[in-house]
Length: 153
Length: 130
Ligand code: HEM
Image (cartoon, each protein chain N blue to C red):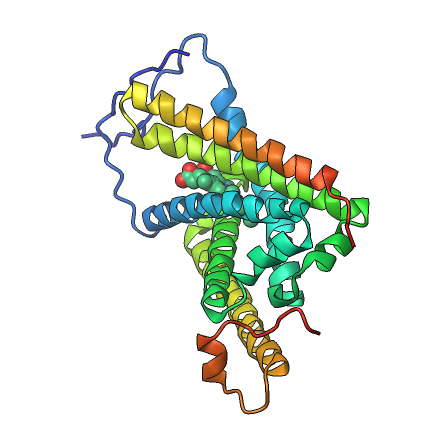
């Protein structure tokens, strides 16, 4: 394959919001790919049977990983919604006329989906933790300890 | 001085292939499908269910029907292709040394292929032990 040298026309791109969104899209895309690879590895352990799979899953059952999962949710939602915005600008005839509006719609959509998801992921963590813990366990205990005995229903 | 409107334009490459055009289009089509597959997967696993309840039986029950296996395989395949093509563009943009770039691209394609084979194998070969 021959690589061609691309000579700059001299134009300098001085984008504002669009440039930051482009950088943001790139960072979230690369991060999601890295996560995808790790996720395939940990899911593949299912072939080695329940003990190995659940032993690996147990690593994730604490509040620090819950925060990481919320971060993952933020990354995928942001990349997906911004991806839809890019598609709208590129493929919708009048997309480029409405870039400002599309930016705002994307942000509103992100907040409208991300906040309730975070709420559910947080409250559900504490509900399950308290349910599986002895009486007297506090929310702080749930935050600093791994989930106790998560296999017992 | 007249306003230039041709910033960034260049001659199309001689004997050009349309690969980059199709790649550009593929990112948009796969992106649309990934909204259903990847965002759907996140909501099913993290919002409607809680990953704290994720165990061997949960996966076995899901993969009991071919439909979820097909869903998961499409998610695996499209996200690997979309991510690999995205990273290919990132590497082209950031690596100027052609030797290093070729090495990095080979590593990327090798990794993606291995994980495509591994993931496909897991989805097809899984038989519940419980
Ligand atoms: C959930 C729905 C998704 C949508 C709508 C979407 C949309 C897009 C679009 C339209 C692009 C092209 C950007 C451009 O040409 O400038 C892109 C780039 C990219 N996407 Fe996605 N994507 C999604 C999910 C994912 C996932 C799951 C991954 C990880 C495997 C991923 C990784 C990437 C990467 C690495 C790039 C390249 C970034 C760049 O060139 O700057 N995307 N995405």
